[in-house]
Length: 192
Image (cartoon, rainbow, N blue to C red):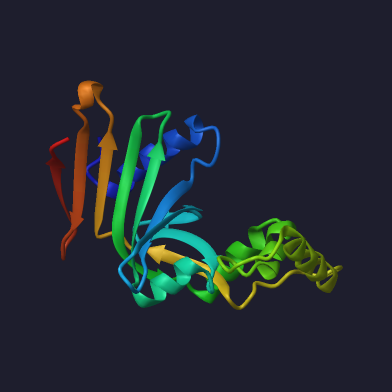
C-alpha cells in the first residue's frame, strides 16, 4: 500500500470511480459559521493533486461566506460499496480565475445558466420564481457563450491531515493517518 497520501488517495479514488453507482466524487464539506456553529453539505470533487482538493460554488453561498470568515474546512469521502472513507482537513484558498473559467466552460450549458439564475442558499419564495429567473437568463445568453458569473468560482482545500479508514469485521477497523510536516508527511495508525 502506498506511503504517499496522494498516491493512496488516487488508488482508492480510482476504485471508487469503478464501484460507486452515483457521484463517486461526492464529498461532505464541513465549515464553521462565525458563531461557531458547524455546517456540512455535499459537494463534488472537481480536481485533486498534491496542491489540494478542489470544488466549485457560488461565492455568495453560505459555505463561501463561512470560508471567508474561517478559511479552513474538513472533507469526507464515504464509499459504502468499498467500505472505506477518507477524511481531509486543512486551510482553504480560492483557485485562480483562469482555473475557475476553465472548469465553468466545461459544465453543461444548463448548469452554466443555473449558476447565473440561482441566489444559492438564500430564501426562495417558490419554485416558479427560480424557474422564471432561469428562463430570463436563458434568453439573455441565447445564441452565445455563457460567461462565468463574477460571484462563482473554485476553492482548494490544502490538506494538513488525511485519514484513510477501512471497515473491518467486528468494528476492528483500520485507520491510517498522515499529518503534514515541514518536509513531508508523518504517518501513523489510530485505534478503531
